[in-house]
Length: 97
Image 1 (cartoon, rainbow, N blue to C red):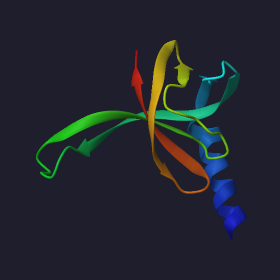
Image 2: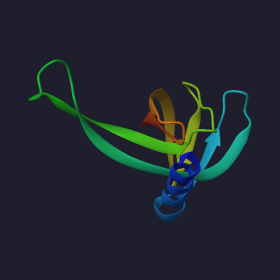
Image 3: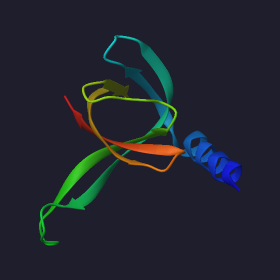
Image 4: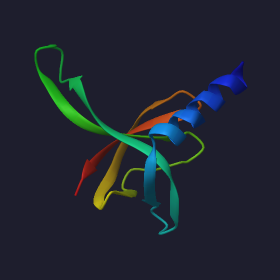
């Protein structure tokens, strides 16, 4: 069953993903598939106050750190923090330079 979820997540990246170039803190680069989208989240304890963040979804085997760079469609982003890791896909909060 575990393999089925992993296969499904890889299929999602292949269908909806775009090419992203990751530049790690040690200056190594890696080109892979990722999904970049914006999400609306609650800010603080009141649901009425919301903000927009940009999220990068990657294969969870790719380890990023705060300060790593992401280049996609000519836009440069910087990695802020990991939001969620389900063991197959990891979501990262990123922001544009």
